[in-house]
Length: 315
Image (cartoon, rainbow, N blue to C red; front, side, top):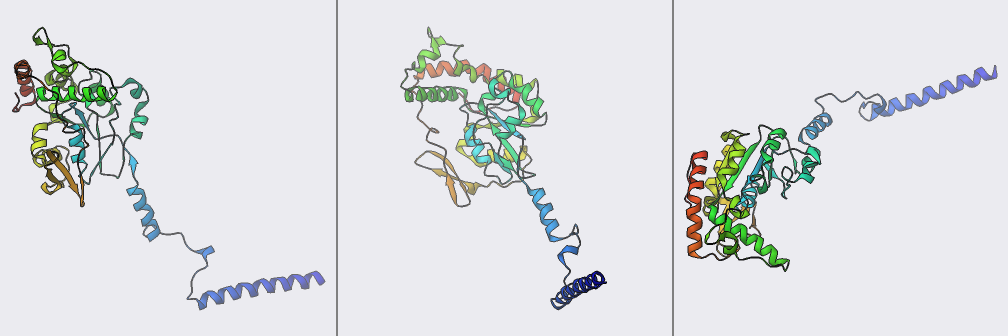
């Protein structure tokens, strides 16, 4: 009998507690107890926020476009200028994935990890000028993505050669190492030395032929490096069209720096000039040696012009 009374009192106490909770909820405007609140619908703000967050999440993606060369042709300038576009994110350093065996063995997961984080719809761009002259690279790039877009920036091959030598010379002097004068490397018994590596890098038609064995010409956009330095905007507009980007880069994004002697970039009130290695004075080359070099390049240049369907004002 006593246990029955105690049980009844306990039930009454629980009922009284529940009634108090209900009355408190009613006074506060009829809100529902959180323990019984319905799950958020797909149109609820929290759900929309989650969906938006998922859609806008950044991630590292393989490049949709690669600047493949040429070395000392203006690849860094082109990359920095393309990075002015809001739909473009660029790899800050040269990756050398396709042309360095140690890197290539690490696989595409490693390559992707070198890329910037991008939003859906943004274009990832990588540049490694060493790709252009490396025989194994075109097939490897194709295997990664047959639809990738390739940008090739070229300049007067004679000027490119001298610039190439100048960079190597600067690096050697910085390391306190000797280096031969340019003419000793370029000429052998008064004739052009065909084995000089800087010369071989300027034989554009030989390297482009390997790329055209794999990719159609329509997938390779040739940028005039000399024109890019003289007047960047027209070349950038062509590159935007090739990459299917909406026109967002404007003439106001560039201003000529009279001290440096070339254009600098301006975006959102901030300016940026290329580092001091750009525009470095070239190593000396005699007029006679330069004339020999220009004569040597006439036939290779003509073949390159025929391959790309356009000509350039080179020596």
